[in-house]
Length: 293
Image (cartoon, rainbow, N blue to C red; front, side, top):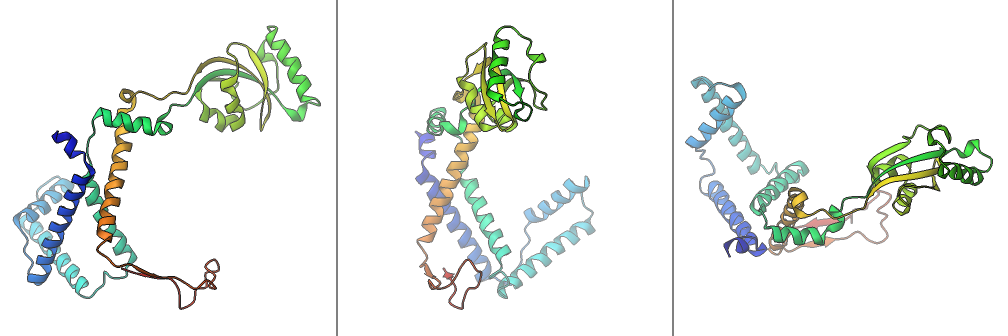
C-alpha cells in the first residue's frame, strides 16, 4: 500500500510544492529580515575544508581555511549586492542557470524506483522503442552495373550457376563491401549497403541463393544462412534500460505538473507583432513581440 502510494504522481506534486514553499520561505526570511548579516555555519566551514582535502589530498592549514572562509564571504557579499543592483535581471545566462537549478531540484524529488508490473506495462506501451532489430547472417555476390551491358541477364545467369553449386568466391565483381555478414542488425546492413537492400533481406528464403536484390551500388545475389527475427525483449533482459526510460518520463511529467501549477499563479500577456511584419527577414518593428510574466 505504501509503495503504491509513493508512486502516485499527486503525492510527488505535493512534495514538490512543499519543497518550493520551504525554499521560498527560507530565502525570503534570509534577505528580508537580515539582508546585511552573513552567518557562516560550522557545516559550511567543514564543507570548505572537505572540498580542499578532496582536491589536495591533505587537510587545509588554519591560514588556508581562513582564506577559504573569507573567499566564501566575499562571494556572498558580491552576490547579495549584485541582487540589490538587479544585475540578475534580463541576463539570459543567469535566467537559464536558475531555471536549470530549479528543474534539477524537481528531478531529484521525482526520482523513484518502480515495480516490475509497472515497468512491464511501460515496456508494452512503448514496444517500438525497445524492440530488438532482426539479425541476419548472409553472403552476397555483387554485380557492378557499370561493367555489365545487361545487368538483369547476368544476374540470372550467375544465380543459376550459384544454385548449381558454383563457388561464390569466384563469381561477381570486386567490391569494398564485406562479402559475408554474421548476425548483423538491419540498421548496420542498411548503413553499409542501403535501406532498400536491408528491408528486402527478411523476406528471402533460408539456405538458398536468391535475388537479385538491388542497392545504390548495383545488384546482389544473396544466400541467407541464419535469421533472428525482430522481437521485444523480456523485462528481465533490459530492466535497467526500461527503468531509465520510465524514470525519465516520470521526471518530465513531474516537472510539467509543477510548471503548470506554478504558472497558474501568474497572469500571462503576450503582445504579438502585426501581421504585416516579416518575421523571416529579421526586420521587426518597434511593435515586436513581447512577453511579460
